[in-house]
Length: 377
Image 1: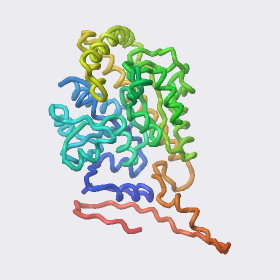
Image 2: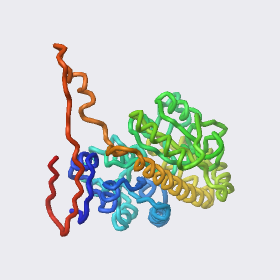
Image 3: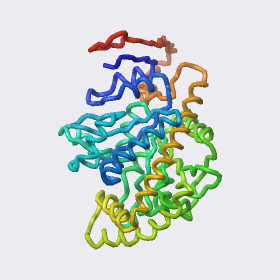
Image 4: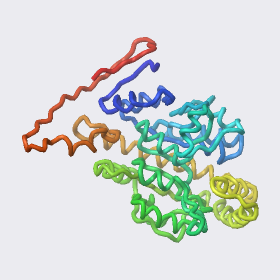
């Protein structure tokens, strides 16, 4: 049990409702309770995105960047059927060095947990688990989308559907450049997902390069502006995410252009080898790294670090904004379990109904380790 817990009304509700296979680190728990800025980080970049030992080095560097920007990193992964929110270095190393770990999307979560397996969480799974834990901002490299030829193959990433139904802000370098960016943006529009380019331009980034020749519906030019966008979504109680697309830093443009030049060749190889579905992205990214002579790896790591920095600053601005709002309601209020029953509250006989309640905020400090802890509201 954690040595220190400060619990607000809404966090208490979400924390105590988590199943016992959720293992939230002490640092993340404390940060959630006091509305400190937190940035969720995925673990497929460790298990399937980068080669060993670059994967674990990059994961550690990204976490350090989050800390340097005044936020708390929460790397999410699954070890032996347990969901870890805020993995430590030993847990991340276990994932990084294990060749048998799975690539876990939303659909795979019940199976992996029930079978006590281990895996790296994709964008979709990380979003679902982060939101379930009360985290509002998630930084990654690039999201999945509509694959090239998707209009006939129907090969569409679960990341897009997750964005349509999980209210979390995803900070990425757009969508992976091996995908059809135009169709992905069209599909995001159909799903009602707000997409904003980060910076002065509405140019939607193409992962390895800052320009895709497609425009984002809107743009935010500062961390504060991005935080206000997220806050407005929260106040509207929209059940969808926000994609904030950050262009790759200028110092990696050269490596990015070199990488783009070999993508077509890698995609052709995948087609010739009849590699389909979820296996396409790992295969193509690996071949791109090999064909680019290391340029892809350098650019990939550079944009991951930059997205972590931007995501951290947005989380800080969002935390500051939500803390300045009047009233006791937390910015991390989960879906209300009674909102769909509101229509049944009023009597059909037309008699007036008076609804009242009491609000109690509880702050608890344990002076020593305890095995069991109960909250009674």
